[in-house]
Amino acid sequence: MRGKNRLGLIGLALNLYLAAGLGGCSILDSSPLIAEPTIARQIPMLDTADGSPAQPSQPILKVAQREPPKKPDPKEEPPGDDAIFDPFAKEDEGVDEEDYDPWEPFNSKIFEFNQQLDKWVLKPVARGYNFIMPDPLQVGIHNFFYNLRFPPRFFNNLFQGKLKGAGIEVERFLINSTAGVGGFIDVAERMDINTPEEDMGQTLGFHGVGPGPYLVVPFLPPFTVRDFFGYFVDIGLNPINWLVLPIIEVEGIPSVVPHSHRNTTTIIQLGARVGDMVNERSLNLEKFQGAEEATLDLYSAVRNAYLQSRKRQIRQ
Figure (cartoon, rainbow, N blue to C red):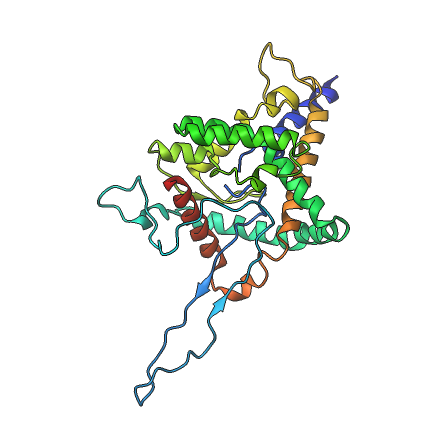
């Protein structure tokens, strides 16, 4: 009995750490272990003796990237709008105030660990997966997991008073769950039924909660402290995690997999998380191609890309 109880506790711990496989409404959903940077390093131009502009001594480096096949992102900034607007900045506060990284020594070490894990484990596995798995099926799996994460997106629209967005999320879920064969086909996208994704980190930002320090943790995409807290709240907002595969036990509410079968829940949650992660990495095999050679500081580039992306999302 003592051995069985010990296994149950281990299962519970793994569930809490790996629950994002079915529950999380992610900032970069099931993203690879580091966020996608958009990098262009400019080399200053110098004048020659005759006054004509000289050519740079080395070429401008730019990362070419391939976006995963997914629905158009309505969060993109309008053309020509280069400035990032922070609706929660104080009058005497510049937009760079949110680029707060007091834990950089720790973060950079975890970032390097995640990068090496991606290079030597996740990416090779994703290449093998990509070889045997047809692209349309990979896109279908992506759509399926995205459809499962409907509840946190719906609730966060409500929490922000975005009733139209909440209605669109319900419409998308019903259409894709029926006509889309359980969510494998994104029929709603083809009907141009889209709305910006919302998560608890955005909800907290919407209500004036500051982002806090930048944070990098093993096995997960980057966060701010606000977004890290919101990430786990979103797990609790998904009924799958307490009605189907319980990692949260609610007294008096039964679940499809009984609470006593924590090892079964752990295996299913872990398998779903790993499968989703490998599938997403396979859809993004070229995402970091050449990034290490194209920038002097990949850590800073990834951090800045993430923080700027979050500012745009909260702005909307």
